[in-house]
Length: 441
Image 1 (spheres, one colour):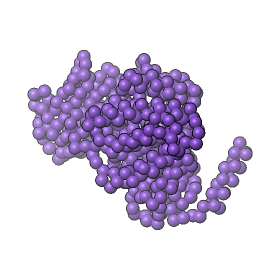
Image 2 (cartoon, one colour; image 1 turned 90 degrees about the vertical axis):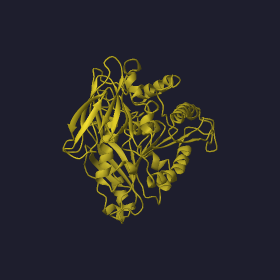
Image 3 (cartoon, one colour; image 1 turned 90 degrees about the horizontal axis):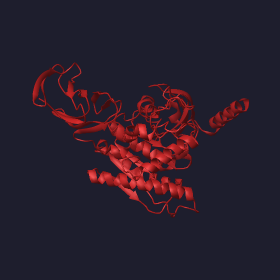
Image 4 (cartoon, helix red, strand yellow; image 1 turned 180 degrees about the horizontal axis):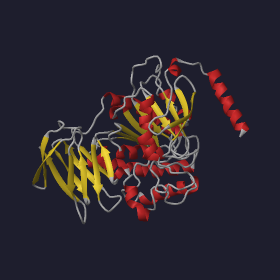
């Protein structure tokens, strides 16, 4: 313990001596917010910070690296878009800066890059979900809550960000590519752009994928994280709906209106390989199938996407660093001209969910089942699901204004609340999913 304290003190002293206190240091102070507690923070150079933070959602501290734009401290008024950038299996928050060239690639770009841990102490990783088993030796492991509900608002509270969907993007490599697409699909009102580098953006939709995705996820859980089978998404036999509800390929409708980017290869060695690495080839081959299928389903659904299959290449950092270099300019162009859907379409397995200002609280016996909001605007919507649901609209109406709500041919009059929202009870299917149409005048 004493040796660890002395080592930490030496590193901190070395950092103070080696790093001149640039203007950025004077204007950056990371504090607690939104359930995130700052354990420590250290400025590594004039742009890069290394932090340790804790959260009740995780039960223990994890690392976050924050890469600021050039001149962040000198200009105290400019707000910047944010890229949330994830590592892969057995990786860490430092990977993109130590192996992926993130600092050089983003030099001169008006962009904040946030690179959090997505696992504990370089273990196999979290698979970017709130774990079904919250009693493992690793603690509650509510990773989606930490990354989405806590880290994002914490960043907005501490840095000068463009704190809207138009100013946020999410990307990752390998397992992190899955995480980026899964978070984007489950929270499309938070991110304008999503990218996957050799990721696994499909884990459930096609029968050909399920054996491989199940084997990989459970091998990571048991073999690398040291937790019981089924800890993350649950056992396939009893929690299949939970797997599907986190699968980007099963949530395509949620991704419409988002900038989507993918890079992949077959696993055969390419120009950036220096030898034969069977593991890197095999893993890339698996992620290639997942990415191809995801891309095909996007095309079939008519959702625009940018797909790069460079064929020759393995599951290694030289290719991901190159992918990121190719992504950075399109990303900045997306931020300059963000897109969004004209009408809201969203589906989820959650009992209660909120997206784009709409909240749907389902009343059903099943804890998880799909409900879908379809073509929702201020003039009405359709809702598909089981049981019944209470729908709260966005604040689209004058407070107190009277409106006629028509459900299945029956008319009722209601007033918008003080916030300008309508609260509507919608009957759905008793024996199976039913689509109910609602008109608002």
